[in-house]
Image (spheres, helix red, strand yellow):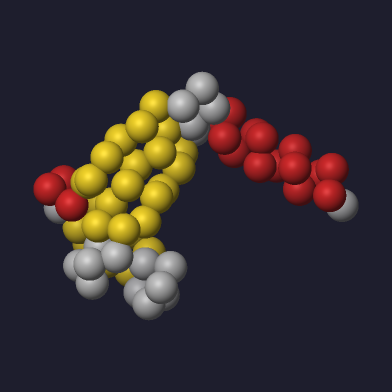
Length: 62
């Protein structure tokens, strides 16, 4: 089970592993596409290099 936040409705949803549509391994992160109970598909990204790259972009933009 995964606890996700639907960016469209803004609600927290508990979804089963069967809701995973795709998992894609990238050099900087892992992207997981999940279908929420409302039928929307969302991509959630995780990984240390992904977090580092996002922080670096925020610092450069500041």
